[in-house]
Length: 220
Length: 220
DNA sequence: ATTATCTATAGATCTATAGATAATGC
DNA sequence: ATTATCTATAGATCTATAGATAATGC
Image 1 (cartoon, rainbow over the protein chains, first blue to last red):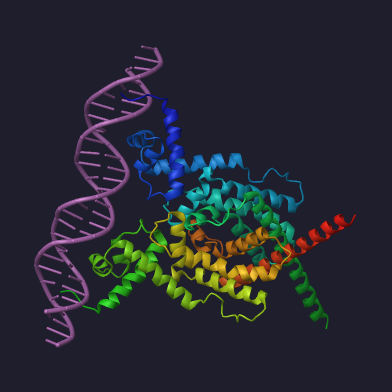
Image 2: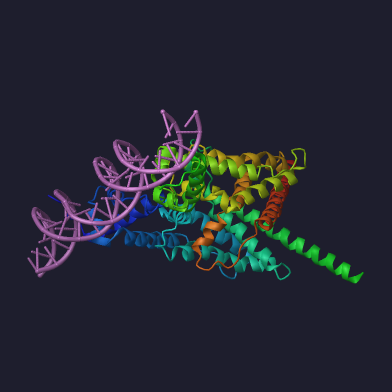
């Protein structure tokens, strides 16, 4: 005799298990049976019952994971918009790294699944997860670099900071047989921030030197 | 009437198509039929004929891609081992970025497939592709940072430089509907090098300042 | 009556193989 | 005789659905 719960409860549980399974194994490598089993052994036919099909479940699982992750770690890291650019940079970096390091969020897992083999099902993913970080980094980096720095150089700086944030540390560690040490996300965030500020400062100095050189040559 | 080629020729062509397909779509998302089709329409039964099964083909495709990529871009970037550490750092960064940016190499595609959903079939991949880069970065970073810097800080520095190298720029761009601009790998390599050197310098300075502070306090 | 859950399965897809066919080298 | 290629298909796996069963709320 089947036990009976509230349907919404089962539905949410499926959503959660789905996000976690999709994050670990990707869309096509995850079967409905996997999800049902990870969900305390619910019947896999319930997936069709609640979501219609696997693709829809995937889409809803992404929205679920994304909404929850952003709620927990807002993009600015709680730093006020009128704070100095360097501090806002820290807020963005820390929020992003903490969010991606939170295994429960499933965010990075799903994102790397799409990077590795795009399903074409998650229209929003790129905007939510990658464009968004670059979007908040860009004006801060622009401000820190000032007007003397070339656009191309600014883009590269954004890309480098972005790279340090999105590196899939946890996923890489699952490839290691015996991971040697774990990185504390908070410490890593602080490190990335210092590294980034130093890199940006160097770019400004280099641009200034170049400018002076050019002016000198012109005056000769 | 079937045309007849040398078997080794067909075998190599399959290997090449396989590497490229696996890179684009991952192991399980790629069917033998996909590979056969990408390979100018050879018969898909030839995969079993030449490789036994799909898993073996996958393993051989990785070895093929890896061997070719390292041959084309040797890990030191051609910089002599007795060159100054900063120059060796440039060699390593440039070689790695060029290798990963070379779409023909299929290297990064397969690697990100494994990061996203490990098959357990490529024992060598982590050693070849990730441990290797960190292995060559580590002694160079150690040398540049010197003895005053804490081990944890050194690890983080290696991780940050590593991150800027392995970021899957091309794969991310396929998620964008209209990629805005392409990054020239050579220019990117030079940028990452500058960024990294500045970050490392800052770490040394910060460590020195901290040391002085500590000594001052001790003398009071 | 409605909602939640389960059973059973049709149909799609994919891999690997058995066995046929033909080109090549001896 | 050997090697390369092709045809056809058995067996595995997976998704989605039809239809049964039982708990709940009216």
